[in-house]
Length: 329
Length: 284
Image (cartoon, rainbow over all chains, first blue to last red; front, side):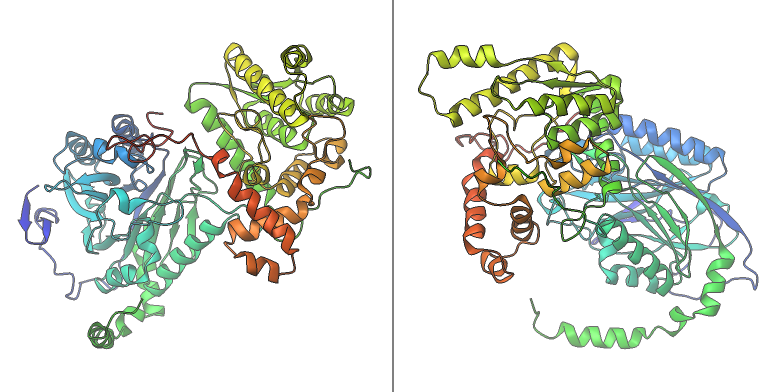
């Protein structure tokens, strides 16, 4: 693919399969009265080896190949799936540039299998900043790069010590293996990004049908009613966003332990009315398959035309007014 | 020493644990931690008390009975009931304990220092047990599992490089009352669950006598101070005895050194554990 440098960073320009027009995300989209079709996706609840990119890449390629063989159009891996999470001083050692051979290998796998891939890695910029990132790869091309915006640095988290923060939430057309009959808009939120509702709101305003959330969420809270504390927060968030934004939410958490911290899994698909339609029950390694139904998005938006009714003008005006006020703390 | 056996209640109240969730997580923690460093087996110093009995039971549940070595290391003044309880735990789990009497080596040492007080003797015993455990760890190809609970670790109620030493500690984030809840959930023998907690370093020793407080109270105070980050004043306002609260606060602060690796004099720009930060699982 061709990358263009702009003042604001790297913009992928080969995002749309050849032969289709480039869509402006803010213009109306065409859809038949009966947007038929379903598309199978896979969530790889995966246990990466900490700091071992080569081993993790190998595992990715195996999972991609088997997901492709089942006919999945997309396989999603968790946050930092190529590297593991609590990297500390290993961050610069495992970082990759967009032209790294490991990424080429994923691009080749997507082309060979006719399957899109979302994978997590530490992305190094030309200026040697390190971003917690997820790539959306399709047909051998990097369609979209999301750099995690909200880097948790509290409790057991220390991301701002090691990482630079992304500065945008952008929607993109998800080719879905070029098998979807309908155009799907997607956006990626990595783990902590989900805890900031403005992020999901910005994606919704760009018309997403699919929020993809790669995650590395540690399990904690041993008291009664608290044991699923983190899981219950993600349960609420994924269902709420799906319902309020009438969009699918694909939540892909990881498995395994790092330095005694266990990741709780629980990867899930939530449909556009907020119903959990598929879920991994537990923290074990697993690949979850589900078919996204275009008609489910349509039904949700017929029943709940929330996006149609959204008052962006009011939001903009109030945001402008607040911007002029001194910041509170 | 308490004469009336009584269960320590933790199935209700602010410290009530979700036993099924915790047991499942700890089974995964043990299996992952042992296998990640190239072992298949775990080794536990089993005293017959609730902490080491729970760790042994969790290890068997996680690794299988064939992969758990329990070493019982009595001293001549150890309570005879400890041996009965340790055997009962092993019987219930289908394992055979290894027994190493530490009396000869401890007594030989203190022949040279006959004036040593019982604290010093107790610490020595704990460190002898540690060295035996690590020796067996090598011959058995089994990783040492720790048995210090969160209450002990926070109060500093343990011997540095003795019973506090281990490679993996499954119960270090569980208060004593929560250890009891899990032990009950796993069906450990009745006497293990009901006898008064004791380090059993000398006859009649009782944790609660030494601490001057009941575990039920200590744990609630610790939970408020540590987990809920309440101030001393807030905890006292909730009705806890100010003397007890001050006692707990002083013990936690005073024992901080026991919870940290030794202090390294900083000289270079990249000092170990200060700027040189890698996960313990580095390369695993």
